[in-house]
Every structure is written in structure tokens, then in C-alpha cells.
Length: 495
Image (cartoon, rainbow, N blue to C red):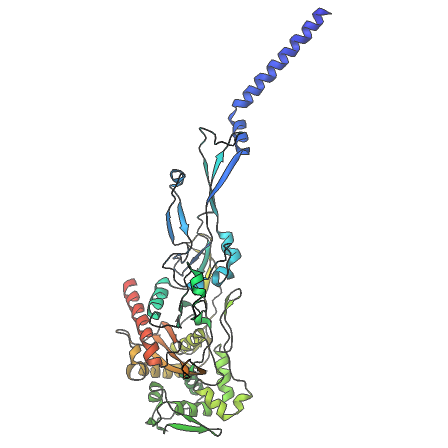
């Protein structure tokens, strides 16, 4: 009995000794110690990014600025930088839009592509191994976790940063207004500027500004005035109506029992088409509009996109503007009003840019585009937004006649202040009556200059709106010239 007890006790001691040895081995086995350490960790987020918004050449319009990461973790993060979403010199703020306090898109492209931009971002974190007491384990180097922090993925716009900044710089001359620069061949928007601009780094101060800096005036609808004479001329020519070479402007014209005055009350005397366009003679274009007829003029406007909103991204669109009804245009008086851009007609600077592009490119209507596509790496397009082929609206011959007339406007007409130092240009001035009165009881008039650059083989449609600017030749034309000269300098530099 005693011997058997001793044997059992010995076997038990051997078993305990084996288990102890095994546990000791597990304790020093790296595979197990690492597993335990990983189960007791603390992860600290250092930075978070959101997908980048680029211009057409993949230049970042957000996330463009960065700085070294400082503090106790600096030595671990020397390969990374702290990205700033919005810089002090941010451009295209009305297009880019804003974020809400939680970092979600609240307006503009930030809102339209909120889900995509959120998914394109990532985080940069540091993970520490802890002991049972919650202290950092000595001898264990913290681990840097890069979870899609710097992929470069995001949205690519059609804007050109250089053109955008040139447009914004030129637009500083206006208290309130807008500028649109469009590629006349395909409708891509190269610049969209609105004045005043809000400060994306201080939204609160902009909320109190009575000039409504959050309004994107480039996408808003306004009275367009004499700019519409370009469409009247092109549509009449395309219909086979020959503009008279010996029209007599006596300072007024009667239509439907209503007398319409020329801005030059004494009249222009005997004028031809180019002179009428150069000096913006109301009676001349009223007679041309009456010869064409209100319904045909309305159809031409609709085919060019007047009265239609353009959606550039989900829920991110322009205003539609307004057109007189076909029934209203059965009246000669309403047609006369329509023919020189007054009455119920309103349009956006984008729509006017489409009109100018059609004249500049030989009579083809382009579809405006603001988003070029998306990118997965900030270097190449992953998915391109559809680009629609231009549709012929009026003949190349009609477009050429109007184009030559627009060049005369800049060379020796009402738009001489728009003439750039090189390359020439074509354009049209407008002083659009609004029917609204200012604090002094005087009617508010919007000034426009809409044209193309250069004069020969035009590449750009440039539309300038100066809210309350009175005269397009004085308030808007110099802004056009500044942009055209910046485009000329950029073209020479790139060549």
C-alpha cells in the first residue's frame, strides 16, 4: 500500500513538472506573446482624410496643403504628413462647397459626392501594446496603421485651376457678379467664379454678409438683355432671313401697339447688321425678331438649353431660367420684348456661355460639363463622366456671320474695353433691365459681357455678369479682357 502511494505521488509530481515546463515554454514563445500583446492594445488616431477633389489636370483643389506631424509621435511618422482640407488661398469655393460640423458634405461637390469622398478617405493611427496595468510595454515599438490615409482617390472636375484663379482675380473688380469660362468645343467648364465668395475657414462671418456670398451666381438666373440678340441674329440667318444693310433706326419702333425705344434715343440712322450688333440697336433686332416670329425664336432658345436646368452632379444643378410661353409670343409686342432680351426671359451665365460657344464653334450646341470623372489614385481617371457630342443648332454660315459681328463689337463697337492686347476677341455687351428698384428708387440694371477668345479659331467662351453694373461695356468688358489676357499668357507659357 505504501509503495503504491509513493508511485502515484511520483507520477503526479512528474505530471505537474511537465505542465509547468509547458507553460513556461508558452510564456516565452513569440507567437503566443505577440498574440497576448495584440489582445491588449491601445489605438490612437493621429489624422483622418477625405477624398480629394481635383481640377482637370489632377491638381488638388482640396487636401493641397500639408505639414509635418509634430509631437511625441513625430519620429514614428516621418514618412507621413498632416493634410489640411481647405487652404487659406482656396479657389472655386462655390463649386467645391462646404462640410457640416461632423465632416459631411453640406453643399457643392462636397455634398453631391459625399458618400464617394467619405469612402475615398482614411485614417492614420498608432497602435501601442499594453500590459495588464494599461502601461505601454517596454521594448515594444508602437505600430503605425495606414488605413487608406493617402490613396489619392477622389473626384476630378473639368475646372482648370489656373483659369479659375485668373477668373477669380479678374472678378475682384465686381462687388457682386459671376464669371464662366467654357471650352467652346465640348462644353467643359474651365472656370466658375461667383462674387462675393465666402470664406470656407470662417463660414460664420459670411452668414452675416448682406451680399449673399453663399449664392453661386454663375448658376443663378438673371435678366440677360441684349446678349440675347446673338440668338435672334443666328436663328434669323438660319431661317433664311437676310438682315438689311440699310435699316433706318429712328430711335424707336412700334410693335403690337407698343413703342420700343433704342438706347440711343436719337437713333442710329442707316445701319447694317454688323453696325447694329456693334452698337446694340434695339429696333434693328426687334424687326429681325418679328420677321422670324416669336414661336420660332422660342424653339431656337429651347434647343440651346434656355429654360432648362443643367445637373452636373446628384442634386447639384443650375437654375433653369425662364422663357415666355408660346401663347404669349402670339403677341407682336411680347415677341418684340423677347427679341432684345427683355420681358419674361431670364438665363444663367452657363446658358449664355452655351450660346456663345455655339456661335464660336460653327453653330453646334454643347452640353455643359463640370465633373470629368473619378480617380482611384490621383493620377489617372478611373471612371469618366459622359461627354455628349455637340448638336448642330444653326448653320456654320449663320454662326460665321454672327461671329464676325461680335468681333466688330470689340474692335469698334460698344465692347472696345474688352479687347485683349493680343489675339483679338468677339463679344456682346448688355445692360439688362430688371424692373427692381434700389434703395434710391432707381432701377437695378445688370451688366453683361459675353464673348469668345481668341478672335480666330476661338477656344474659350467667357461670360461676365456684373450685378447692378449698369453698363456691360464699362463694368463687365474689362473683366473679360483681364481673363482673355491671362489665357493668352497661359497659352504662351504652356507652349
